[in-house]
Image (cartoon, rainbow, N blue to C red; front, top):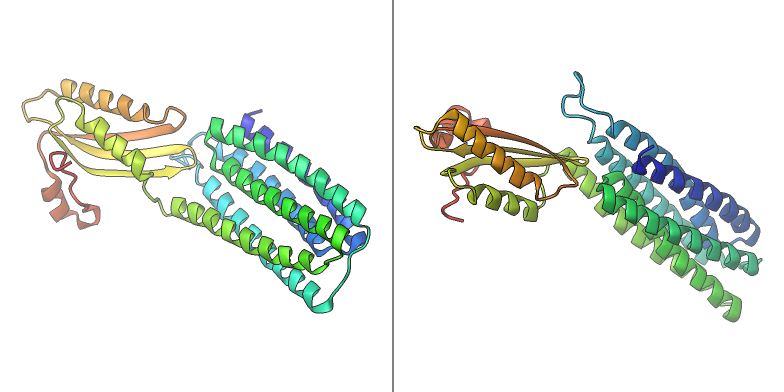
Amino acid sequence: MTLQKRATIVSSSVAVVLVVVKLIVGIISGSVSVLASAIDSGLDLAVSLFNLFAVSNAEKPADERFNYGRGKIEAIAAVIEGTIITISGFYIFYEAVQKILHHEKLTHLDASIGVMVLSLVLTGALVMFLNYVARITQNMVIKSDALHYKTDLLSNGAILVSLVIIYFTEFYMIDAILGILIAIYIIYSAFELIQEGVLMLLDVSLDEEIVEKIKKAIESEPGVNDYHWLKTRRAGNDYFVDVHLVFTPDMSLLEAHRIGDKVEEKIKAIDPKADWMINIHLDPYDDSEINAESSPQFHTEKLDSKEN
């Protein structure tokens, strides 16, 4: 079993424990914060199970039908997870407003505080584990899960603070006020998650920092006169790079190929944890303008190494 799969199973197990405990205490106490947290943990469970499915399929190798693999399943999972988080945020906001309008009081504060302390401990440990797995694997699904549970960790901390304040001051309104603040924070966090997933589905280029390193790797290789049509994208942990390298017309194909291999190795060294898929086209002269005129759909701004 891979580390990614193990992480999704652990997060699912933690979510099961939290949703059962929070739901029982939330119903008994009447705390909108605890009940909202229970709903959020239930969504966590659904998301973690979906993430297990996504990770299992994303790891499958490329085949005759999926020539480039299934890495974009991670992006789909991120969009779905972000959407679910957004819905839960709006639900928490609604419940908090209802709490303010009806002036409901809380009961069984001791149990509520206890369950939130338990939730903080379990969620905190889970976040540290998921962050560790994300650093090792660079998996987008695990990163999304870590961000999700980090949001839970902060919201659970805020809920605990509100319950403690109510316990000592009987200022019941703080439960609803913090519920609204938590909802706004959750919706904000979900937007970034959805954005990242959508951009990957739209084949956004790699981070600017990585692209700059790719350019430097090409420019630093002797024998490469110029380059053009540098294009990059990402699907899960797969990094795709397409580029045309320009050589002198009298250079042998064997020598040009050897230089191309060296460029490829330099690019792969930029991030050894990523799975690089590099396609280098060897040009005996700069044909970017000629091909751009005959094939406008492939026209991109020429990248002149001398100007860099």
